[in-house]
Length: 41
Image (tube, rainbow, N blue to C red; front, side, top):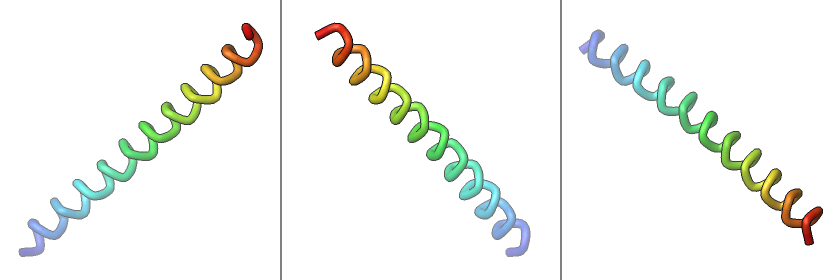
């Protein structure tokens, strides 16, 4: 069971890192698109 707990821990860590990465990309994307639309309008 110890190995299983370690695997779960690594999976959770990886998911949290990748989720934070996706959220940061989405935030940057929305900010840049809003900025471009605002400037071009």
